Length: 133
Image 1 (tube, rainbow, N blue to C red):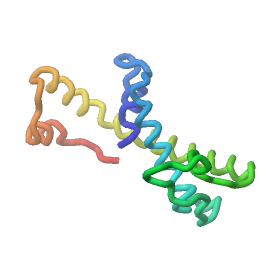
Image 2 (cartoon, one colour; image 1 turned 90 degrees about the horizontal axis):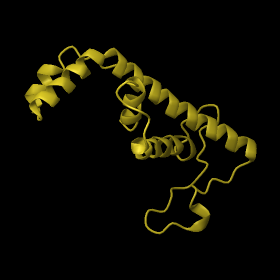
Image 3 (tube, one colour; image 1 turned 120 degrees about the vertical axis):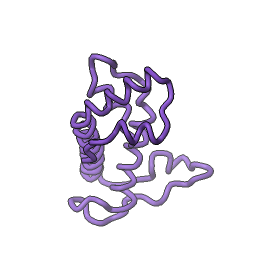
């Protein structure tokens, strides 16, 4: 889950400050959301349209460095909002999952600190009662 680190920082503000450690998580989540909107046409409001071609995987060309999305300014604003909506929706879902399961996660953290390692059977036992969504 790309936003788990930042979500944990927000969910437990007494234990963590917002950090730069979540930068990669945020970039990955944003890239996935951007692809959903601009490449895969996954926003009904914008229509089932691919606004950009697949980005080069080997050598980036300068005109495609920022996705190569050439659209009107108003359309770009709608694309940006759709990306923001997806990322914030995922963040809110992750926050709810962490918040609902706070006791389970804190139990796991205590055990991990006490034992230093947990194997699969330990984690299965500790996460009984975990609410998945």
